[in-house]
Image 1 (cartoon, rainbow, N blue to C red):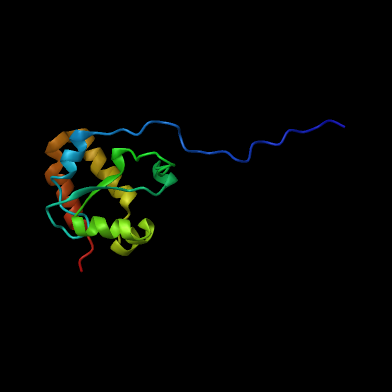
Image 2 (image 1 turned 45 degrees about the vertical axis):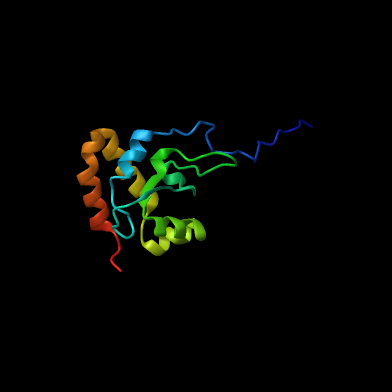
Length: 130
């Protein structure tokens, strides 16, 4: 009787790439309003949890996230993001963080700092009003 080899069932779809860090993009993020409150003094908040449909594989052990997955948050909102389950935080804010990250990243890649008014307008039009 011939033996059969069982396929590896421990397949890890996370690509083994070094995350891109962009000082220019992080500077651009600091020009934008907070995606939750609209406040103008913001911090760059990385979205860490995976969303494979958007090509975000999450943060692995001792790995940082690509700067593409950054949103502007006020200090208060950034602290809230870290104080609770991240998916719950974004759900409670009514924001799809991965989609918004891709929109802002795309605008910046196409237009550089000139994208600021367009990104700010998108953020302010789509934020949940309290």
